[in-house]
Length: 400
Image (cartoon, rainbow, N blue to C red; front, top):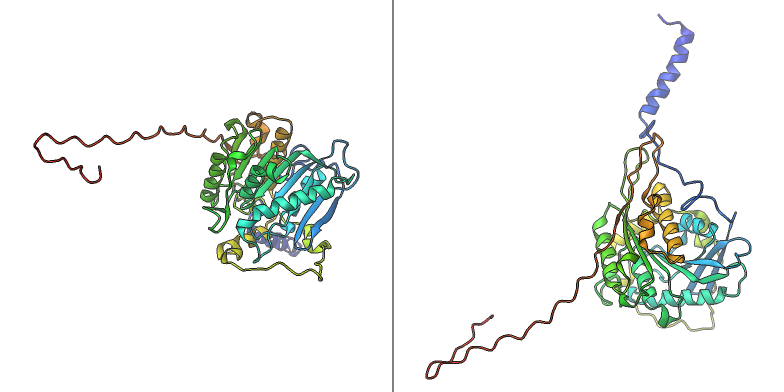
């Protein structure tokens, strides 16, 4: 029979083992952390981020950049276009901080007022906000936007918005973007009368633009269709400037990695819009007339998705499937390279390893097919045979 002191030592140990055995994932492999350096990594050039609200009441763009003087060549500009309904930059705060501390000037145009903005108006509103923000920051020695290096980064409905901004860049006075990066494309409408963002004439997108989309394998059908449509309609952009990326879920360890529509988001309370002083409304100025329409309100499905976006945290998918791929795509686009440079780089698809050494499922790549050649014009139908002399006239068969 064991002595009393030994029982006193064994009981707490047995209790601890029982508790650990009931904790999900206890002892399981953990996913990779953010890399220490390189694309998607934490070797930042700035220790903190300057946060500013630009514009006027009801037409605000939030600007973020690393504190201190800008480099001599200026800062590359990243225009982040949020998902429909996700108007608070807090939902994307972790990604914004990564971009700003890495040296970019991040613009977050608030192109939507909840329950007051029609999707059909969003493209024009976003273009005006970005143009005004760049003009306001042009002479700022710390912000110093480099308009020769502009990337449009969209999430869900922000992807068709990014495509429309790129298509209208010259006529609206915006700098021509070098990169369109679409994370989980969605929210595309059939036309301006349907709910969602209608694609404009994407054939006007500059042929030198690099277009990269990233979708997941959860709820993937709609995102896949939307990504292919953007690629197809941007017909002036050659195939070697287009790349479709798929992030794969992985439950080898704990917590599992799940590539959902909300995956690109990653909240940070430090980026809550309530922490900034927004421009006040001019009480002397009469507000413009307002007419409500049903497409201004979020559907039940959109409400659920926005809640998931606002509650999203950061994990390996953020660091390696979104942040890293964007960093590498922007570097390629700004240096004039095409998608082949990304496909040939083994680091682009690598998702590193779980803590037990097992590799995380890698990204898969696909080059979209070239557009089909136009079909030849249909030949006119042959005339009906003439009636024989003295015979009955020939009547063509209906449907032929």
